[in-house]
Length: 71
Image (cartoon, rainbow, N blue to C red; front, side, top):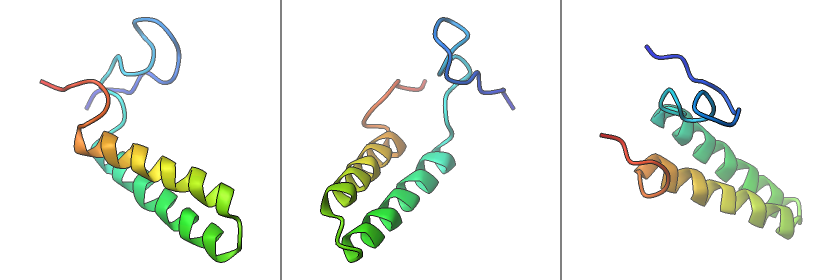
């Protein structure tokens, strides 16, 4: 198992060891979606929109439509 390099810049920075796993991205997608629903329920539409956009981002990353191509 390769060690993730973290968020630093440069060749040893973010993504140098492969970036976040698909499981992490799916967990972030689900978490962002839950937060968006809770915020809508609490009457915080702007914050809910930000959480929903985060869910879209993590969904695109998990699906391989955004970010570095593997292989």
